[in-house]
Image (cartoon, rainbow, N blue to C red; front, side, top):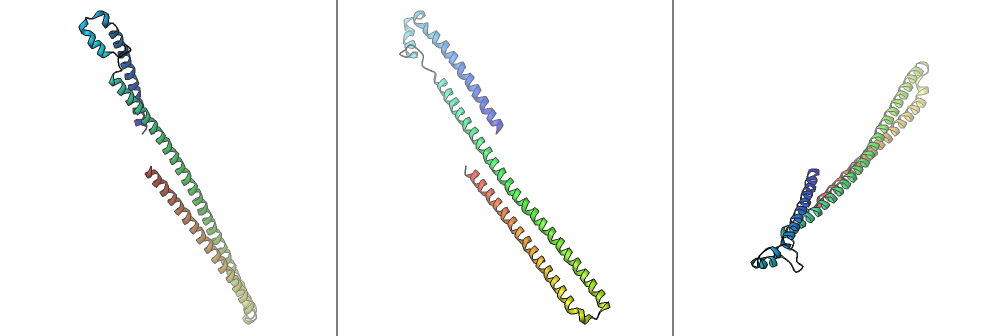
Amino acid sequence: MVDSKNTVESSICDLDRLVQLVSQLSNQYRKLISYLPSTCGPELLPEFTALTDCRGGVPEPESLSTIRRIRDLTTSKTRDIANLLLHRDVLNSNIVNAHMQRATVCSTLVAELYASESTYESERNQINSAISELKLELSQVELQFPKEELSNSLQEDISRKETHFAQTQGRCAQEKSTMQHDILLALDDMMSHKQKVLCSLDAK
Protein backbone atom coordinates (compact mmCIF):
# COMPACT_ATOMS: atom_id res chain seq x y z
CA MET A 1 0.00 0.00 0.00
CA VAL A 2 2.89 2.40 0.80
CA ASP A 3 4.55 1.59 -2.56
CA SER A 4 1.29 2.35 -4.39
CA LYS A 5 1.00 5.67 -2.59
CA ASN A 6 4.59 6.59 -3.50
CA THR A 7 3.94 5.61 -7.11
CA VAL A 8 0.85 7.83 -7.25
CA GLU A 9 2.74 10.77 -5.75
CA SER A 10 5.59 10.25 -8.25
CA SER A 11 3.06 10.21 -11.10
CA ILE A 12 1.59 13.49 -9.86
CA CYS A 13 5.06 15.09 -9.84
CA ASP A 14 5.64 13.83 -13.39
CA LEU A 15 2.30 15.27 -14.48
CA ASP A 16 3.16 18.63 -12.89
CA ARG A 17 6.45 18.73 -14.77
CA LEU A 18 4.66 17.80 -17.99
CA VAL A 19 2.10 20.56 -17.46
CA GLN A 20 4.89 23.09 -16.92
CA LEU A 21 6.65 21.91 -20.10
CA VAL A 22 3.45 22.16 -22.14
CA SER A 23 2.82 25.64 -20.72
CA GLN A 24 6.31 26.73 -21.75
CA LEU A 25 5.82 25.35 -25.26
CA SER A 26 2.44 27.07 -25.45
CA ASN A 27 4.00 30.41 -24.49
CA GLN A 28 6.70 29.98 -27.12
CA TYR A 29 4.03 29.09 -29.65
CA ARG A 30 2.10 32.24 -28.78
CA LYS A 31 5.22 34.34 -29.28
CA LEU A 32 5.85 32.78 -32.69
CA ILE A 33 2.24 33.36 -33.76
CA SER A 34 2.48 36.99 -32.70
CA TYR A 35 5.13 37.54 -35.39
CA LEU A 36 3.19 35.93 -38.25
CA PRO A 37 1.15 38.93 -39.47
CA SER A 38 4.30 40.97 -40.17
CA THR A 39 6.53 38.20 -41.56
CA CYS A 40 4.23 35.98 -43.66
CA GLY A 41 2.28 36.52 -46.85
CA PRO A 42 -1.49 37.08 -47.13
CA GLU A 43 -2.04 33.39 -47.90
CA LEU A 44 -1.10 32.42 -44.28
CA LEU A 45 -3.47 34.87 -42.59
CA PRO A 46 -6.55 32.55 -42.69
CA GLU A 47 -4.57 29.84 -40.90
CA PHE A 48 -3.35 32.37 -38.35
CA THR A 49 -6.91 33.60 -37.82
CA ALA A 50 -8.13 30.03 -37.27
CA LEU A 51 -5.41 29.41 -34.68
CA THR A 52 -6.05 32.59 -32.67
CA ASP A 53 -9.03 33.52 -30.55
CA CYS A 54 -10.87 36.83 -30.47
CA ARG A 55 -8.31 38.31 -28.04
CA GLY A 56 -5.35 37.50 -30.26
CA GLY A 57 -4.18 34.55 -28.18
CA VAL A 58 -3.97 30.82 -28.85
CA PRO A 59 -6.56 28.36 -27.50
CA GLU A 60 -5.25 26.07 -24.83
CA PRO A 61 -4.22 22.72 -26.36
CA GLU A 62 -6.65 19.92 -25.65
CA SER A 63 -3.80 17.72 -24.41
CA LEU A 64 -2.91 20.28 -21.74
CA SER A 65 -6.50 20.39 -20.52
CA THR A 66 -6.61 16.59 -20.45
CA ILE A 67 -3.37 16.42 -18.48
CA ARG A 68 -4.73 18.87 -15.94
CA ARG A 69 -7.91 16.86 -15.55
CA ILE A 70 -5.85 13.71 -15.08
CA ARG A 71 -3.71 15.48 -12.49
CA ASP A 72 -6.77 16.74 -10.59
CA LEU A 73 -8.38 13.30 -10.69
CA THR A 74 -5.16 11.63 -9.53
CA THR A 75 -4.80 14.14 -6.70
CA SER A 76 -8.39 13.48 -5.63
CA LYS A 77 -7.87 9.71 -5.72
CA THR A 78 -4.65 10.06 -3.73
CA ARG A 79 -6.48 12.08 -1.10
CA ASP A 80 -9.24 9.45 -0.94
CA ILE A 81 -6.65 6.68 -0.56
CA ALA A 82 -4.93 8.59 2.25
CA ASN A 83 -8.27 9.02 4.04
CA LEU A 84 -9.04 5.31 3.65
CA LEU A 85 -5.62 4.40 5.03
CA LEU A 86 -6.16 6.69 8.01
CA HIS A 87 -9.62 5.21 8.61
CA ARG A 88 -8.16 1.70 8.40
CA ASP A 89 -5.44 2.57 10.91
CA VAL A 90 -8.05 3.96 13.33
CA LEU A 91 -10.17 0.80 13.00
CA ASN A 92 -7.13 -1.42 13.52
CA SER A 93 -6.17 0.58 16.62
CA ASN A 94 -9.70 0.23 18.01
CA ILE A 95 -9.68 -3.52 17.34
CA VAL A 96 -6.31 -3.94 19.07
CA ASN A 97 -7.46 -1.91 22.08
CA ALA A 98 -10.69 -3.90 22.36
CA HIS A 99 -8.82 -7.22 22.15
CA MET A 100 -6.31 -6.04 24.75
CA GLN A 101 -9.14 -5.13 27.12
CA ARG A 102 -10.81 -8.51 26.60
CA ALA A 103 -7.46 -10.27 27.09
CA THR A 104 -6.90 -8.35 30.34
CA VAL A 105 -10.34 -9.39 31.62
CA CYS A 106 -9.70 -13.02 30.69
CA SER A 107 -6.27 -12.96 32.35
CA THR A 108 -7.79 -11.55 35.53
CA LEU A 109 -10.49 -14.23 35.58
CA VAL A 110 -7.94 -16.98 34.99
CA ALA A 111 -5.75 -15.65 37.80
CA GLU A 112 -8.75 -15.58 40.14
CA LEU A 113 -9.65 -19.13 39.12
CA TYR A 114 -6.13 -20.36 39.85
CA ALA A 115 -6.16 -18.54 43.19
CA SER A 116 -9.51 -20.13 44.06
CA GLU A 117 -8.23 -23.58 43.16
CA SER A 118 -5.12 -23.00 45.25
CA THR A 119 -7.25 -21.92 48.22
CA TYR A 120 -9.49 -24.94 47.75
CA GLU A 121 -6.53 -27.31 47.71
CA SER A 122 -5.04 -25.67 50.78
CA GLU A 123 -8.28 -25.91 52.77
CA ARG A 124 -8.81 -29.51 51.70
CA ASN A 125 -5.30 -30.45 52.80
CA GLN A 126 -5.84 -28.74 56.15
CA ILE A 127 -9.13 -30.56 56.70
CA ASN A 128 -7.62 -33.91 55.71
CA SER A 129 -4.75 -33.27 58.09
CA ALA A 130 -7.18 -32.39 60.90
CA ILE A 131 -9.22 -35.55 60.27
CA SER A 132 -6.07 -37.66 60.33
CA GLU A 133 -5.03 -36.09 63.64
CA LEU A 134 -8.48 -36.71 65.10
CA LYS A 135 -8.42 -40.32 64.05
CA LEU A 136 -4.98 -40.72 65.56
CA GLU A 137 -6.12 -39.15 68.83
CA LEU A 138 -9.22 -41.35 68.81
CA SER A 139 -7.18 -44.47 68.42
CA GLN A 140 -4.94 -43.39 71.29
CA VAL A 141 -7.90 -42.58 73.57
CA GLU A 142 -9.58 -45.89 72.76
CA LEU A 143 -6.55 -47.65 74.12
CA GLN A 144 -6.94 -45.88 77.46
CA PHE A 145 -10.74 -45.72 77.86
CA PRO A 146 -13.64 -47.94 76.91
CA LYS A 147 -14.86 -47.27 73.42
CA GLU A 148 -18.50 -47.03 74.45
CA GLU A 149 -17.90 -43.98 76.65
CA LEU A 150 -16.22 -41.92 73.96
CA SER A 151 -17.86 -43.12 70.81
CA ASN A 152 -20.76 -40.68 70.89
CA SER A 153 -18.77 -37.48 71.47
CA LEU A 154 -16.02 -38.47 69.08
CA GLN A 155 -18.50 -39.47 66.42
CA GLU A 156 -20.20 -36.10 66.70
CA ASP A 157 -16.87 -34.32 66.41
CA ILE A 158 -15.92 -36.33 63.36
CA SER A 159 -19.34 -35.75 61.79
CA ARG A 160 -19.00 -32.01 62.39
CA LYS A 161 -15.56 -31.95 60.79
CA GLU A 162 -16.72 -33.99 57.83
CA THR A 163 -19.72 -31.71 57.37
CA HIS A 164 -17.47 -28.66 57.41
CA PHE A 165 -15.18 -30.34 54.89
CA ALA A 166 -18.11 -31.16 52.58
CA GLN A 167 -19.43 -27.60 52.82
CA THR A 168 -16.01 -26.13 52.05
CA GLN A 169 -15.54 -28.53 49.16
CA GLY A 170 -18.95 -27.62 47.71
CA ARG A 171 -18.29 -23.89 48.07
CA CYS A 172 -14.93 -24.17 46.32
CA ALA A 173 -16.45 -26.23 43.52
CA GLN A 174 -19.18 -23.62 43.07
CA GLU A 175 -16.63 -20.80 42.93
CA LYS A 176 -14.61 -22.75 40.36
CA SER A 177 -17.70 -23.29 38.21
CA THR A 178 -18.60 -19.60 38.45
CA MET A 179 -15.11 -18.56 37.39
CA GLN A 180 -15.17 -20.92 34.41
CA HIS A 181 -18.58 -19.58 33.39
CA ASP A 182 -17.35 -15.97 33.57
CA ILE A 183 -14.31 -16.82 31.46
CA LEU A 184 -16.48 -18.47 28.80
CA LEU A 185 -18.80 -15.45 28.73
CA ALA A 186 -15.83 -13.10 28.36
CA LEU A 187 -14.40 -15.19 25.51
CA ASP A 188 -17.80 -15.31 23.76
CA ASP A 189 -18.12 -11.53 24.12
CA MET A 190 -14.67 -11.01 22.66
CA MET A 191 -15.35 -13.29 19.68
CA SER A 192 -18.71 -11.58 19.05
CA HIS A 193 -17.05 -8.17 19.12
CA LYS A 194 -14.33 -9.37 16.74
CA GLN A 195 -16.95 -10.75 14.33
CA LYS A 196 -18.86 -7.44 14.37
CA VAL A 197 -15.70 -5.49 13.61
CA LEU A 198 -14.78 -7.85 10.75
CA CYS A 199 -18.30 -7.55 9.31
CA SER A 200 -18.04 -3.76 9.54
CA LEU A 201 -14.71 -3.79 7.69
CA ASP A 202 -16.13 -6.08 4.99
CA ALA A 203 -19.12 -3.78 4.57
CA LYS A 204 -16.85 -0.78 3.98
